[in-house]
Each structure stands twice: as structure tokens, then as C-alpha cells.
Image (cartoon, rainbow, N blue to C red):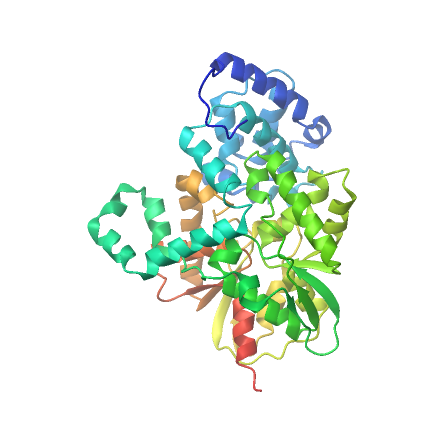
Length: 447
């Protein structure tokens, strides 16, 4: 297994490469590779091509590399892997493609083969085994980890560690991340508000709230606010306690077997709840839930799930009762979540909600549809490219000079907080989840 820490009887590099080559040739979808017309319409949408100008760092170039491997003309060597690793997986190329090439699926197929056969440094194997397999699928373990982080941040230990200089042992990007991590809540959303929140007034529909894993620990208050907004708009909210991590990080790093296990647990939890919609405010998780049918093609429950998944902005903007919003005097801009925009096709609704708040002046962020560099764990595994992309983003923010940057995904929110910190703007510009901005307006409404 790719996540194994065993080092005994390691096959030779030649043997691993041969196995990887065979796996790639069997796994890569020939029709999808053939669908690429080589037109290059994808290139302006690709952040890594925009930063490097290299053909191999574009979707068209990466598809050409995959096809050469599939056809037996190219050995899947380290250079091949590095170009696939450099891809953010933002899927901005898919809406831009006139042939409808599903690039994300090709990338997933290639990464699964690479995870199974290509040599992986032991720290990454250890992190995947401990964090991806040992923590993310287990909400209670994740909450315990959150409480440890909270103790570190609030007990004075963080101040002592910073003064000691120990943080200088960490790479710069991890030191920056340590500086902007929010203080986790001691309890998740279920422990805070329970598993059932009635609708205000006559119910419009019953929704199942997907709480997420990182979202539920670092941004619990956002989930609490989301339940309040849904209830106010007329939705009865059920939060199935048996749900788990969506599996996106696992699928995107090649561990599709564990991603399938997590998908089955979530499908069972929400089907038992008998909800009309599965709702959330995390673009990365939403895209994953919507694509469970791709992950489990023969599972009727996966189709059931995919048909019901909605970003919260979709329900609040068009299905629920209008929210009574008070004034929030602020200039607000919005950074799209890549998977929310490029996979779920949601980009107007959040802008509509933010613009409807009395007192808000909404200004469009240049290149808001371009990835911020977060991309799951990309900002940790590819810090140099992630930093370049984020610096460009912060240049746009500085020129626009808003009071507030809103976004719709916990990873994007953390990345925007990191960018503001690096740019020296964290005192002047706030980064917030759009749910919290709308909740602030709800609290400001006259009662």
C-alpha cells in the first residue's frame, strides 16, 4: 500500500517504474485522453501555466504527457510525476474546454497509480497514514487534536515557543501558517447546537447539514451560523452525527480506496436521515459529495447523494424565505472556491447574497475565479508555487482595498488569512466565510 511504512523487501526502482507504467496504461481513460483537441483554450485558465509559461505545466501539456505514457512512448519518470504534482487540481480548465474533457478524472487516475507505485518520502507517507487515515475519518480524534491546538494557543505555551526561537526550525511557510491558524472551538457543531434545528415558521424543506472535518474544528462557528441561517430561511436542519470526512483529500492524493469507504459512510448517514437536500458551505467537500457517483459508479446511494447536494448559497438565494438582514457598512469582495465554481457551477449565488446586505458595497475581485493556491494540502506540499499564486492574489486585494474578503471554503479562507498576514494587510482587511458575513447582517437586523 502507498501509505505503508514498511521498508523491507522494497522492489527496485526499475521494478516500481514498470509496475507504475502498467498501472497507468490500464487506468488512464483512453477516450478522455483522445477528447483533448490540443486547442490550448485551457491554458489561460491554468494558474501554473500562467506562472511558468511551460507547456508541460498546462492541462494540455499534462494530458499530452499522460497520453504518451498510455501509448508507451514515455516512461513515467520523476519529471512526469513532478508535473502532475505541480497541478493544483483546481479544474479551472474544465469549464474552459470546448471538448468537455474531464481533466480532474484523468488527474485522479494518474495520482492513484503514482501513490501506489512511485517512491514517496517517508515524512509524506507518515503524514498520510497518521493524519489522512488516522485522524480525518474520526471526528472525535480530530476534535481532540483541535483541543490540543487550542491549549497551545490559549495557555501561554504559544508565546513561550515563539520566544524560544523553536519555530525557526520550521520552514517559512509552516511558520506563517502557525501564525494565522484560528483558535479551534472546544466543541463541534453537534455538541454545540444538537442534531436537529427546527425551521422558523412553516418548513420549506428538510436539509442534512454536512459539517466537514477541518471546517467543524477550525470554523465551528461558521457551521453554527449556517444552521441559524437555514432555520431562519425556513429549513429544518438535521446534522447526522455518524457522518465523516468527505474523502476529497484522500481521492486527490491517490488514496481512492479510503475515499470510497468514507463515501459509503456518508451516504448511509444521510439516507438514514431522510433529508430533501444535503447542504454545506465548503466548496471542496461539496464537489466531492456531488461526485460520489463517479467514485462509486454502481452504488445507487451515491447517485441519491449527488442529486441532493447543494451549496448553502443555492438554497438561501433561491429556495428559502428571504432573510431579514440589517446593515453592515463595508466594502466586500469575494474569492471563488475553485471546486464550488468549476465543479458545482456555483458562482452567482454568493455574490447575490452578499450584495443583498444593506450597507454592503460589493466589488468584484480581479481573477476571483483563479485558485488562491490552497488546493487541499497543496500550499503545504508545493509552498513555492502556492506562494507565487497567493502573492498575485494579494496584489489584486491590495489594489481593490476592500474592508473584507469573503470566500466559500475553509481551505480558501485559511489561505486568504495567510495571504493578508504575509502582505501586512491582516489589520486592515478581514477574511471571512460568506456565511459569517450574512450571519453578521442577520444579527444586525431590527427585532
